[in-house]
Length: 308
Image (cartoon, rainbow, N blue to C red):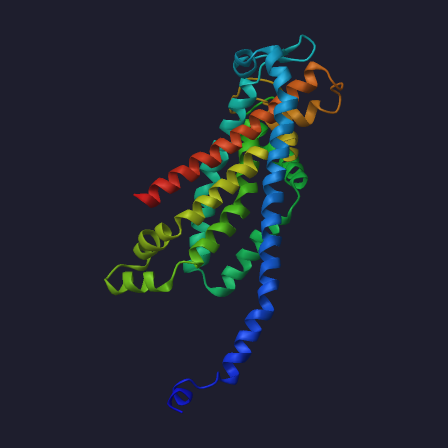
């Protein structure tokens, strides 16, 4: 009798909860398997691209020579000379210039939208940023070719305005939407308690934004910078229309050729199996490794900063 009183039957609510958990457990298992498959597919695509570029690019590097290929200054399909140092330096300078211009503008815009701007103003600016993100790259190239390039030619008294400088300006504008959107999302995710505590201790609003909110969101802001770098270094169509596409060593106001534009321009008429086509595959391999190296370095720096 006493045992029966101390061990009552389960309540109906508990029974229903157990039945519900038992019913959804197979569905959770199916979703876990589905997520695993999606992750494996993503990894598989990266592996396939890596293997394809390695298999296709190594023959040209072996024939030309690694040193001559990476540090050669002459690219001439007629003379079978394939040196891409000019392409590499142009891509580095162009990406660095776009980051130097685009990251501060995008970062301060994100801080303004997240912390300072009135809701109506923020809505207008946010809509404009979304429109910038949706504009095709060829449109950026057209505007740059018909507006920016003539302005550079007339302003700096140059024979031609298509140059590395024009490419940097176009790339800086193109990376703004990614930097602004991701940085704003990271800033909005910072708990309000952090800012309230800072303000309670006597800090001003600007001090709170830049000494509390921004450091708390630095991983998201770094991700925005990585996206901007990837967009800048991987762009081809807009750059073809404003950079001049001449295989020169980089100079700010001279026509240049990026790694991406080198592939896009010559791939159509490079014969299958020729050294020229294999060299273009090798350029793709160098570009792929370059992007991977940037991602690894930034992730390593962020990991060390968190551990510190």
